[in-house]
Image (cartoon, rainbow, N blue to C red; front, side, top):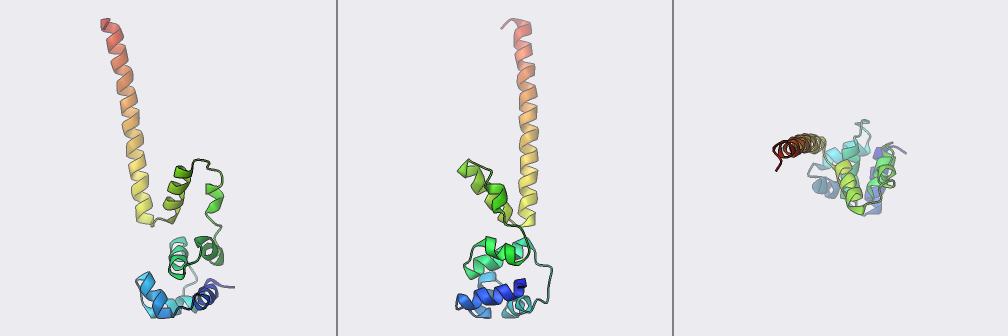
Length: 131
């Protein structure tokens, strides 16, 4: 079954029209129709997840229909539920948002490294002055 066939089947099961799905996606009925016809065979993870949300089905189903491995593989190895939620949110984020997260993490690591180096320098200065 192609992704387009899966979309059509899931849409009909949810008793939605192409227009309904298009409205939920913030796009047109024509776009939904083209996806169902498999006009674009290069479905991204984000597209699959967007259709899952619009159709009210688990993202895992849409990802599998689009030929992607489900995200749950990563999450099953994480025991802290807060971190698992963050990973799931990151995986579902748009590419531009992922780039922002990467930039923020790099900056946080840089600040932590500078703070750590600064802290060691302060400790040495205190020991040298006897304070």
